[in-house]
Image (cartoon, rainbow, N blue to C red; front, side, top):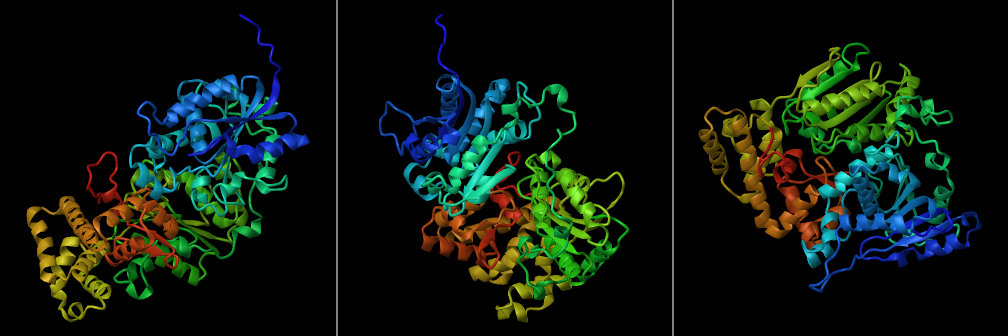
Length: 627
């Protein structure tokens, strides 16, 4: 076998392009790096792969992400084989390719082979799946383009690769067969209309915003361009792999190495007012509150006391008004000056996505605490800041939209470790009981509205309809009884009456017919009622907005996570609808109470019950609504 006498170079910067692109897209970076004396030890290695707009030849196919990831692996072994260190730099879809490569290597037990890679840099990577021109893509390919199909939010394989990278790369502690710690930096374009900053940054702890749109972010026109200076800084910054300081298996339990910066806000930043109102997903006005006054009073007493329970769990079925109660209690606490700071976070995703890291990051940002790059230290960093706040700067943290007991318990335990305990208070809303061995949690159940409050609520929802105003209270008794006073379900029933022109007694007859089929009531009746109201409302949506437009709008919401609020522009892109059809469908969705608006109608969402109905969990049948 001949000897390999190629000279060993120091650093190779592997450049991975995006969808419908080519290695030529990196020309501006390559030119600047070649002219920069500070980077004379670095060679650029553009990696190319097939990503055409379409394939018209029956003899050729468009490679999948797995194909491209394997091709990248071969490129790193051959073209990158002469380099001591490699830096992987990607744009757009290229970031998903890099993540897929890393995940496949780790799943194959080849983590030690990744030790030569010193860092990963991603520009405008659609980490939430993709927002890449969904309208154009759906119109052209539907399901015929292998790469485009995996970019549709949120493709399971893309999500799985990201989870692997976060757990076994970003937050790994040692080089093993199945892990390899690497710094990963994710940049977003400040004017990117294709990949949103939230998607580009995702859950990666080291992120930044750079000038430019989706393509301008990788087209620096001078050595002073921020995209270039950002990449240059990372290329010149040594990492653990550069210094040989990566931990072995024996060092996993060791204390952090000296010199690690502890990042927390100055003490003064923890106190003060916060913009928590805009984070709360409520859709009521102060004149639309019925029957919850005593419950809010009781909740406020539990929160106000310096002693007593440090966590209050507002528990009840979906749609019963847990968020409304929490919002009213927080609003009164703010008005009465009970807490010096109120922060609010909404847990997104399903029960299989615990959401602790995202909640910690969101709450820390509101408190002015800058968390470090290693999320294993987040709880300690928050605890230091909260303790520094002292008893004179009490914080109320509201965690909304917890789904099941296991999820609620895990998040409450994590927040306790992060310092959200006396003198601070924690208010959570959940569908299940939060378990606590110390009995420091108080459960407050929320039930449906009583007859009098429910009738007042129904009249408020239909305030513009004279018939509802003139009807006696007993007219609404069947609606209140069958929906068990659930405000969300009552609202859907009344909106059905208002939007269809059906006589009220026919709407009531539909509900009582369902009741007769489930004489024992209970959860069986509750599921039937929800399914019936959703079916009828979505059917009406089809008739008014058009079936294709209605389905496209609902699919756009389900492309995101449960509980996500979507900006209007992003929602239109995800739906793939032209402007006039989108506006008509959105307006119709609001009229039918299927879509909720917030932040002055700039963001939109759907109720978690509707989300679960239109996009059921993997272990449920389509059209199943949980209670």
